[in-house]
Length: 566
Image 1 (tube, rainbow, N blue to C red):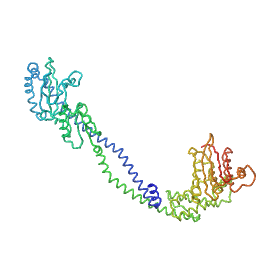
Image 2: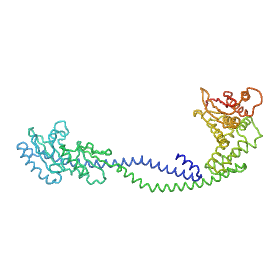
Image 3: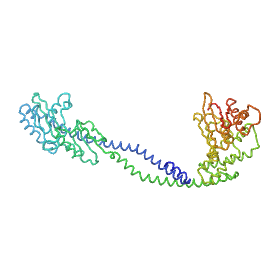
Image 4: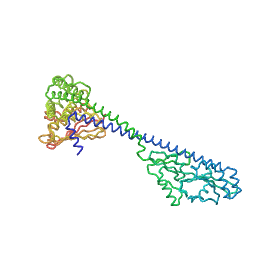
């Protein structure tokens, strides 16, 4: 209902207003389409670029952490080759080895006091109490053959809270001995801030997580991180598992060849920041384009409105039967083309009048006979009177359509260059005729067309449908409304056009006279039908035919058979 109301309001607008509205809607639609394409194409590009920047940032964090860990691992490897320490492991008790270790690492610990918590040593089956690392035996067992720690000879634990409530993680290094009962392990406890320092200045608002071997090592949300560590300590799990830690929109970033993974959990708007900034910069340009477009629309509308006024005056001249006035308005636009067509129609009408009594050749006689069967002064002046009436009603849209349909009808009917045309042209001509007749008869005339699309390109004898419809209107209608139906069907070699009405009908005697099967003069309604029959036979060489079926008081059905040739 709303759509119908809008259409009714639009149809009551003046032409210039409708033109302005149409152009405005078109401009807004084009801009909206462009913005939609920008959103899906350029927006995706900006999001991909932002994702690459996040990936590069995450990889840099991972590489920095990896380099830092390698530094500590290198020191442990160096310490594992210290002759004094190795000798003590072979000769002394566990407590004495600890003293030698303390002396060997004193300088290093002094230099890295804010980075490394301590360096401790453990012996197989004899080790120090290790804070909350309840899985110490599992750590030692990870150095057995076949495990990654055995191949690289070190193992990095996840982050945990020690007894002093400090956030640390440990690197274990195995020291091989000839005596397997005196197998030693070095442990370096490192403050978690060694990891956090590589991304603690991030101000993007994203959540950053550092992972290792399935456990959480560090994150930039410090309150949440400490709460997770405290919870894991209470549960005696030791480490924080990262399962179900991230939201569905988390962006995973791998740190390359290191053993650490960097996960950046971003919010949806962050990926579109650059895209939104581009749109903000583009907004002034869009406003300028809109202003220019609407200004241009106003100029075009004013020009069209002026040409429409001139064309209206020309049409009024035709309605007043002023056929000697030139109807052209100049220009190559639709108004100029329509005026040229009207002027050509005027010239053809004048030519028809001047050549009414001149028949030069047999083909021209046949064509003009068909033309007289289709157009007569009564129908033409009725149509022009309808056009004149529409112009006085100030119904510009219907007036323009009526003139268009009259031009189509006359242009097709007056063209003498071909006897057979594609069926779609014949139907277009019939539609123009029906439109003009309905201006006169209104609701007293009901015509339904149902022709299969597959026949539209088939050849059809020119000017056969309109005379049949005209015959139904003028000789079958009577004083009541009439229903006329045009439909089609086909067999193997031919297609059929059927014109059927529910009018007054004809007797079999009249049908025989029209079909040229009996002698005698034709009745009034028979000239148009006889003309159609002769034209179909002539153009097909006698192959095609016309069949008439009628019942007095019940209606008439006329069937035209033509070849399926295209």
